[in-house]
Amino acid sequence: MDTEWFKARKKALKVTDAGIAAEMHVDRTRVTRMLNGESELSLRRVEILARMLQVSREEIMRRAGITEPAPEPQALDLARAPDQLPTRSAYSDVGPVQLRRVNLELAMGAGTNLDDWIEEEPYAFDASNLRRITTTPPHLLLIGKGIGDSMEPTIGSHDDVMINLAENELGRLDGIYAITIDGAGAIKRLAPAGEGMVEVISDNPNHPNRVRTFPRSDIRIIGRIPWSARRH
Image 1 (cartoon, rainbow, N blue to C red):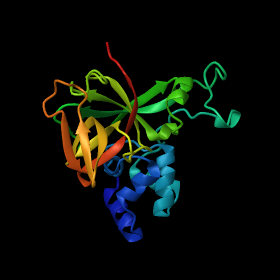
Image 2: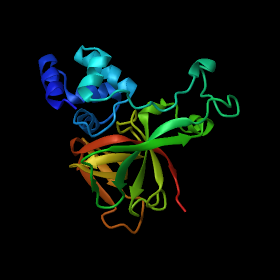
Image 3: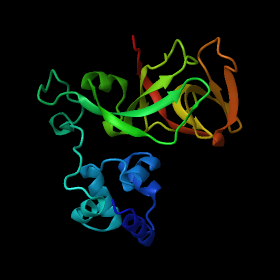
């Protein structure tokens, strides 16, 4: 990976990692890992870099030291049924929706430092079930897991959770969100508290400091949690 070339090219064009991350729909630290050679570049991401850095796809691949980009997760053929997600029963050759499972252990206790997100593997999710849960495009959905018992019985320790990156603003009603507070990650219920304040709530009635209040500016919402699956 020719990291110095990427740095110089970004500087010359005034392109930031945050801007690249927005185009790729990933976290900024994910882009940093890619450009340091610590994470694979898929074809879609190579093409985004080529467009933003105003060079050819081949130049990006050469500078990244790769011969072939990493494969993309299987895409759905939405042209067959533009008003609904295809399901296995309707299109047996399409298969399930491929979401991204990430090694993002969000604490449901004191909090876990989120220095990085490491993509692990695709996560096959039934298309018909996904349609019942959300209409958000699959590339804006992540699968992670919670650690701890502060959200019991709603979410248990090591339960799989879906994070909807498109829903990263607090609404008028309470909801469960993946968040960071001063760099520490957590899964908590959030509720508006008025005058720019937010209540951060643990569902477990036996959890100490079950309800805490923070300024909204102290909280970064990664995404809402619309679904979880209990591990047995």
